[in-house]
Image 1 (cartoon, rainbow, N blue to C red):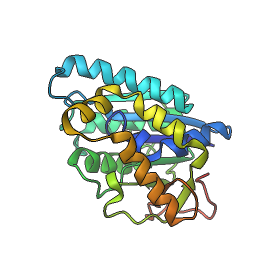
Image 2 (cartoon, rainbow, N blue to C red; image 1 turned 90 degrees about the vertical axis):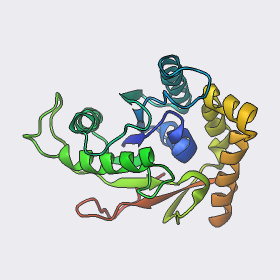
Image 3 (cartoon, rainbow, N blue to C red; image 1 turned 45 degrees about the vertical axis):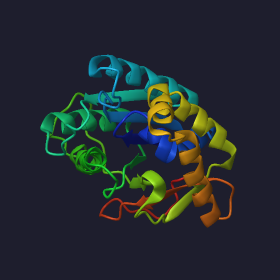
Image 4 (cartoon, rainbow, N blue to C red; image 1 turned 135 degrees about the vertical axis):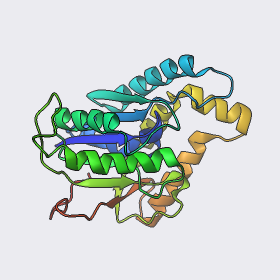
Length: 234
């Protein structure tokens, strides 16, 4: 299969579905990662232009570690992700048409911040628009594919419908997350938050819910015609 994960900021995919992506890759599937925002405002000391470059590079290194074939960046500044922006929709459409995924993973519509919620809506809209031949981008139109929502930060207001056992991949998930040093180190030094432990704890909690050591939870977008009769998650 061909799997496309579209997150908002660099590191969001590692947090929400990094273990699942690593498992897909090891099982021989083609994995593609895409970030809508460039993460340029995720620090209080490093200035946006410099941080943008740092975070794009961190995302590339993390994606390579997880086994992603490509890591795309739509390059929207933080806090300016808007679902009604046609230019952004077209860029996401092109990524979808270029990668030709069998399924897409993205943020839950009720995630904790506006950039994430807007990304969820962007992916929903762009994945439909990608099927319309006369809405043109460089690549040709594709069909409408199944869409899965990954866990919210800390799992709040999210009840998984499907789980993926990532016990074998938890260390790799955390190693990939740790590639985002500009975020992980900053949160330890200035917010007293051990973000690796934070993410590991959520994975352990989801594992408890489905009787494995570590897991990631997902919900399936139920709108027509995205439904299917077979399990697509690993």
